[in-house]
Length: 222
Ligand code: DX5
Ligand code: ZN
Image (tube, rainbow, N blue to C red; front, top):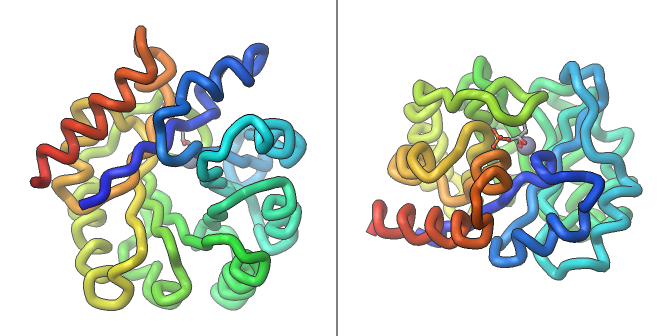
């Protein structure tokens, strides 16, 4: 399996953002958390911040929208420089989520859906063929530094089985409480993209943490 690491910029020091982008240069993706104070009780990274970091890196910007009715803003985030945009299945009607995915793809970007911890695997089924990425939350969205929910692993495995059947090229990402230990459970359950915020930025050597996580996970699923 092609394991990719997606450090979450939400855990960076925003007073030194450019330095903290450089610290994760060895990662495949940069995960960008967007929050609106409504879908989740917190605020995240705004479009102008994405625009500011876009010229600093050629890495894939993986933008996770935790906002109500994301269709209103997908163009804004695509224009700001996102490469992948994911929307929560809980954030609007099925029809509008379809429309949001279509809009992301019409911008030439990759699209995906996200499920919160209490949302079942089957909730992705209406959208599965339109997804380049499915993201399974392993914490309640809204805050970094929370404890990994190991009981999400059966859902990850179930979604991997659905993807194998209906859309094998789609990536499967996990987000929340992922570190050098919990990442192993995630890849064994079938995830291939690992979002890691605190574990990477709190590490004495973030570049080494990224490399170790990728290597250990790749070894675990050899
Ligand atoms: C939570 C965000 C996560 C968060 C992960 O709502 O979606 O991406 O930054 O942070 P850690 O890795 O610290 O749990
Ligand atoms: Zn996220």
